Amino acid sequence: MEQKLQYIVDKIGELNIQINEKQTEQFFRYYKLLVEWNGFMNLTGITDFEEVVCKHFVDSLSIISTKDMSTVDNLIDIGTGAGFPGLPLKIAFPNVNVTLLDSLNKRIQFLNHVIEETGLTDIETIHGRAEDFAKKKEYRECFDLCVSRAVANLATLSEYCLPFVKVEGEFISYKSGDSDEEIRDAEFAVKVLGGKITDVDKFQLPGTDMGRSLVKIKK
Image 1 (tube, rainbow, N blue to C red):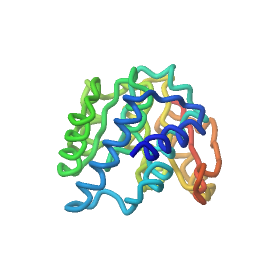
Image 2 (spheres, rainbow, N blue to C red):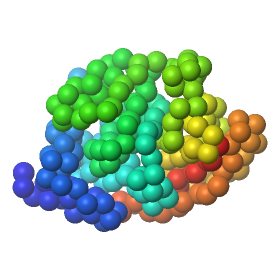
Image 3 (cartoon, helix red, strand yellow):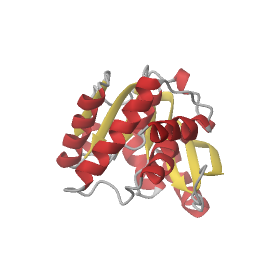
């Protein structure tokens, strides 16, 4: 177990993020619960410990290459699924208020269990559809940052995500390395929604063969 805890510290450290003992244990507990619950519901196709650390935890936190998280008071993760990227961001940056939204109640139950077991605070889950909650005044244009690692194309995602973002806030979409065409095709939709693509940060995820593009959209 000590080796596994050290592996988490080392891999997250490659992003220049230092985590303490409590945070390391929260990540490990999250991993254990992910695998346990994956036995009776479909949360992830990746269950190998090192792969979860690299392809879920480190991937979620890779946003720091393009976003200073100390400037973020609150964020919402749309279509969070098993909690990526919102839950790892909450563990690594505990001062950020986090909202996790997903349309499947079973996944929300899993997330609530992880939150309880890891002792996280200032984090809420919402069961529902993004298009419904974006109309509610307590969520509309209320967030510094919206993130999504969902698989929908960028034009559709922007339609779901940008309504949650404050003016001058940002939506950052986690995309695969080869999404240039999708990004170009989304430019018009983004503009109509009051956003502007300001940067596309491309890199290879440390310790994997995965290419990643982080698309920054300012409102």
